[in-house]
Amino acid sequence: MKHIEEKIEFLEEKARHIRRLIIDMLFKAGSGHPGGSLSSADLIAALYFEVLKHDPENPRWPDRDRFHLSKGHACPVVYAALAEAGYFKKEELWTLRELGSILQGHPDRRTPGIEAASGSLGQGLSVALGMSLAGRIDKRGYRVYVLMGDGEIQEGNIWEAAMACSHYKCDNLCAVLDYNGYQIDGRVCDVMGIEPIKEKWVSFGWNVLEIDGHNMRRIVSAFEKAARHKGAPTIIIARTTKGKGVSFMENIADFHGRAPTEEETKKALEELG
Image (cartoon, rainbow, N blue to C red; front, top):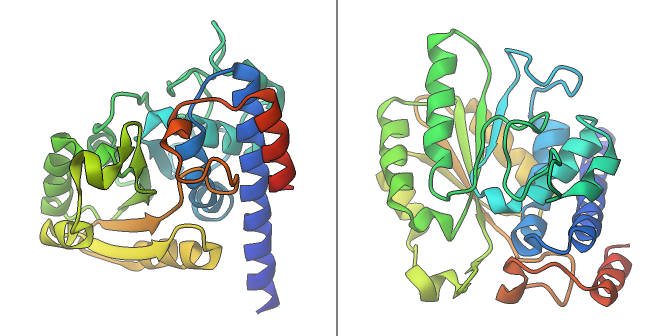
């Protein structure tokens, strides 16, 4: 039991540190997307420091698990995790969005640890499907993970891919939905409602798990259940808070794509501890 408690505490600390790096990174860049980066920090911390089979010293190791960030604008959270894991020096984070930097405003393969470019929304599940089928054809035992946004799944392409993932019984694929309830123009339910979300994925033939996306114990448990499930892909619907961890950013659509000012950065870092 002590081992489990220590693991959860370790992952929570990683998530806190990732959130601090996000705030610092965006302030120095003067642009970027804090809301969705902060909402998914706990999920990303669990993936990179507990779930994924990967090797920062050998990013193209053939048997590594694949992770794809479908909601590419939230890349600061992945960049922070990659730096923390040792894929590149943390100093690179302070070059976010600069001309010639390996860390652009949307991910591309110049960055060690990034599997595929993403930015145009709605395409990530199709990319993950391709990775999943490639693993089967190549007889590799790796798993594929993809993180999507709730506003993003308004795209029709997502549902075409969902049908195909189920049809081909891609049980080496785990999708994660960062369900924070907001997108750039406001609340998801006002822009284009996506409920009943669980029933939709069930009807498409998926194994569906619903969790509190900030409860690290539930997050780790959900990934373990997904890995054990056979015969169908799994989606983890993670209920999260936009801007989680910074009080004046939480559930504020303005912080979907606005960097904090110097004063806001100071206050945010104080709150994160």
